[in-house]
View 1 (cartoon, rainbow, N blue to C red):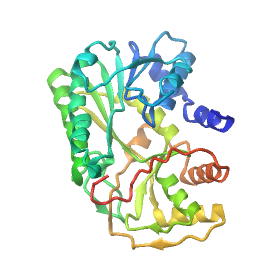
View 2: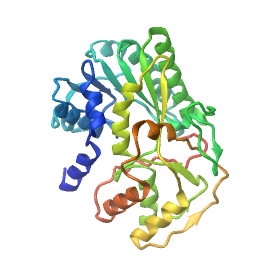
View 3: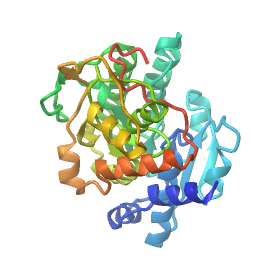
View 4: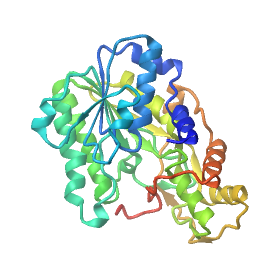
Length: 339
């Protein structure tokens, strides 16, 4: 990891005082399930830094298949315990340790368009049932997605947490399935759950804004049919995710972890100015979009620490300096649900 990456991870994993207080008050250890994905490493590091700052003796444990070379080592290097496990194997899950608090990061978005529908449903609906039963006495913050909502008028605010669900495509339906499975076991066993509908996390290596920036940087035309999206910075996602453990309830609490609505056209123009490049467009903004409303999130947890202009500056600088990105496009522009 070079100096720029180290500095970025330090920024994305810095806990504020409220996160430290949440970690201080945990009754036991913290388990991060599916930790080897995009979010897991800085989230685990934030939790570990909060443990140290709180001066408490609690373990932060990362569980994943750790199938990518070196993925397990990066957790060990920051003092986070690791346990390799296929969470789809119910017998193996029985042997995982107890924990007072669990952050559920498991999920599959892509694969529907590539014939992997069955695997998507397995990961998004079966595994939640395995987890909910294994840690029925724990508090669980479970990632979901804003894809569960119906499309709304693009010129209006997105839905709040009690808004109409209207998933488009098998992926979105499977996410509703994930929520319903957690809800079932929450009601049946009294398990306290917070459903976190995230949309969309951004940092210099991935996210909607990077997708737009990369196209502008490469001189590709920007399709503005999906003309609007919500964006939030990853460091804010991490701190709020950990604090959502305090929201967990039975039946589940629901939180839209969602940033402001941005215009794809406006963002492209801003990246064009940052790169000194002319931007070309294709398509025309649809009058409906997949959006949600994060007002309740920011009222509860305080304002975002990184605004949209700051996000643009950070991403433009990262790309201009030639730093590594993950080549994991969000496909936010897809409108038929076939990711």
